Image (cartoon, rainbow, N blue to C red):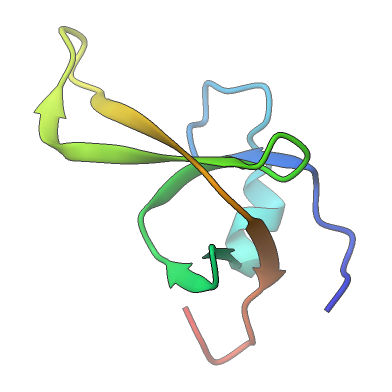
Length: 82
């Protein structure tokens, strides 16, 4: 499936890589062959994803993030899935 998905995408509305219209359609991430549902941001060209580090938050109340490196494959979710 080779849709026109961006190289980098974030769910954080304050990020310059946020695309609300695309996120509303539904984007899935396959990371190292396994589907992930907790990805906050990804970059295909640099091969990383950011996920929340448990329930830890910073002083502004945002979750602390871990960057994991590996093969990143974004795809659009089907109409019925989400």
